[in-house]
Length: 170
Image (cartoon, rainbow, N blue to C red; front, side):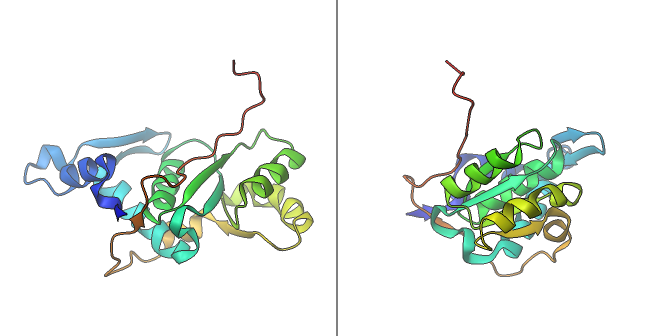
């Protein structure tokens, strides 16, 4: 077991965000339709997501996410990882039955969803008999940044990402 901050991607982002050099602190992590977002912003939002998810994502537990591409997608993904969870990315292009299968098969108990996509997941959650908590991404992103959160412990062998394909990838 080791702390999440010891992983290279988080260590590098933290070094940029906390640099004494203003140019380093201003380094852009993600550019999307809303603009440019720095590593400091990304880390702060990932901490918000981590704090809002709580311990349910710890230990490599699967957390699905249904998000359009962009900064918020990356922030939620990093937040799930920061919580010690395994990300199960879902696509708005997937039919309901596939979404249901991916969520059930990955044993995700939480699904972070963009507010505009929540309606498409409600029937899926109902068919899963309430075993899945739907969480609006804007709620996570608006959460107060948690103070005093220790580093999530991770096992280098635990799951980090589940990718479901159509089976035609080669």
